[in-house]
Amino acid sequence: MSIRFSVAAVAATALIAAFVQAAHADVTFKSQDGVLEITLPNGWHEAKQGGPEAKIHVAGQGTRVTVREHAKEDFKDMKAVATFLAERLKKRFTDAEPKFEDAQVNGKPAIRVDLEGTEPSGVRVGYLVTVVEADTMYISIMGTGNASAFAKQKQLLADLANQLKVTPASTAAAPPAAAPPATAPPAAPTPAASTTKPRH
Image (tube, rainbow, N blue to C red):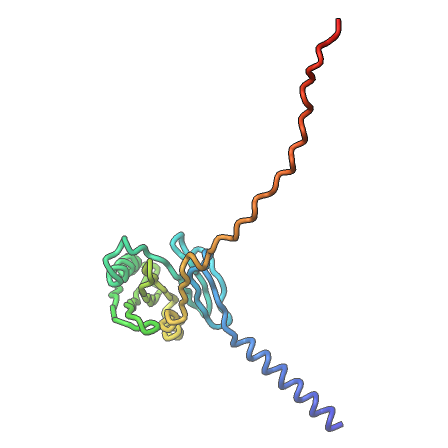
């Protein structure tokens, strides 16, 4: 009886451990073109209404994260991208004052914008935006949520930029190998024109 109980206890413990591990597994989200990829804790899911510029838009733990691309020819540098985004967000608030700071993302320079304010509806909201530079574009990772959720998840939102992976478009969307052209069946021989003159 004790042996059976021990086996059952070990099996139950293994099952619980597997469940806990699954509950803490990370989830990876990719842009449709496969260029951008970001990893978040389990419990996050794809969200709608990210806007036409959003390459990745996900929600979880009372917050949302949006990853966007910005063409290099449209901006002087990363600071210009961060300023543009901050100014656009300020229009939604009555009392927001964005704070800019230099940051490091995977050993490369980045710019972070921290903004909290009150919407016209009276709701307090926070935004944390990190702008990084890729080979052919600037990328912004924007995390947002109501004040309480934002305060709890702020460190996670700040660390998200380090989870971002950028794959060159040529590698992410390599065209499939061209199929060999189909061989046309040999043409049927045409009957030779008759040279016999009709008899009268």
